[in-house]
Length: 78
Image (cartoon, rainbow, N blue to C red):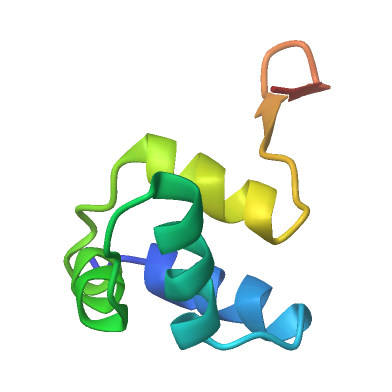
């Protein structure tokens, strides 16, 4: 199965007129460690990016992650 997260993150970054390079830089600042474009790209390509980093990306881009309950037909925002 193809990993859709790379395209989803790229689209969200582009919607904010940002580059993956800028995103990696901001992640470095927030995590207080070197976070390179190469490491971010590799994690996205391989689908190995930790959920905590996905949450950080959403925060940097001013998004909230939401879940849709298919049984109750309700949106739950974390």
